[in-house]
Length: 127
Image (cartoon, rainbow, N blue to C red; front, top):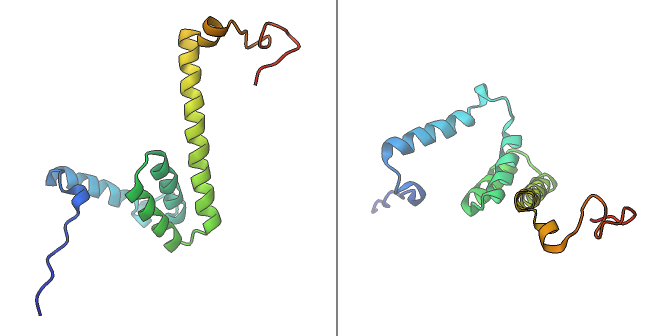
């Protein structure tokens, strides 16, 4: 019977061994059950949301599987994803608000006073 070649972790292949070891030690410490303040299911739900937010497809798949093994329901996984969607949407609003404030885009481009309605009318409000 021939031996199967050992599978490589290609996702870590380009990282020097000394750096990879530190990362994996850090990761192991995060998931050490005796030293953790957060239960495993909750950690995996957080990891699902973070994976979606940073667009890590491999992370997402792995953490969904781990969350289900830790007892997460489809509803809980879905809610974690929904939280990531909400925070990502809020980040877009935040970025546009910062740029608008920095360059006063709404006022300079359209002359709209956001505090007093679209055209300065106090009875009119903007969304």
